[in-house]
Amino acid sequence: MANFLMITATSGTNLELAERFAAVARDKGHTAEIVDLAEMDLPMFTIARSSDSEQSPDVSDLTEQMIDADAWIVLAPEYNGSFPPTLNNAIAWLSRDWQNFRKMCTGKPVGLATHSGGGGAHVIMAMRSMFSFIGADVIGRALTSGRNKEANPETMDAMVENLAR
Ligand SMILES: Cc1cc2nc3c(=O)[nH]c(=O)nc-3n(C[C@H](O)[C@H](O)[C@H](O)COP(=O)(O)O)c2cc1C
Image (tube, rainbow, N blue to C red; front, side, top):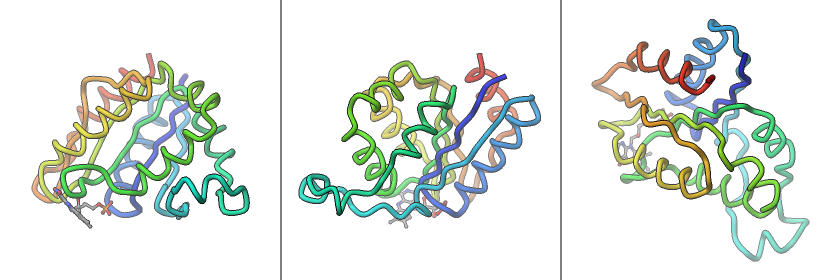
């Protein structure tokens, strides 16, 4: 049994997709939680803000949740050929605690998924680049869906099985 964390960058169709992934994981006997980064509404990361403890958000619960998870599925819509600021911003805040950041990222099995306006290939590429850079093991298979493309249940199934190994 694996402990999944679904991390969604937005609270709309990508949150719905996160809920579907969580249901697939639970049906297979795993546990699954969802983190909604848009709902967290973190202040924008700047060096000035991060150097001032009164202006820095407490991301220790999120850090713990991400460390404890055996695998993450990260879901984000494509924004201008990349990912939304909520995701970049959260990663920037998390990376300030670099020792725990390394611990949470190194070798973490990560799956990528999107519900985007178009095909979503660019956001998958952008996330693959960032999550590989920070040391995660990003699996090859990813889920793209959008206005004109339903999420393929077989892909969701295969991704959960691959990540739980
Ligand atoms: C600022 C902004 C930029 C966007 N850029 C793209 C884009 O480059 N490619 C694309 O396919 N869709 C783009 N979209 C559409 C979103 O990917 C699409 O609406 C997505 O389903 C939103 O996810 P959500 O329902 O989880 O909020 C953009 C939307 C916004 C708000």
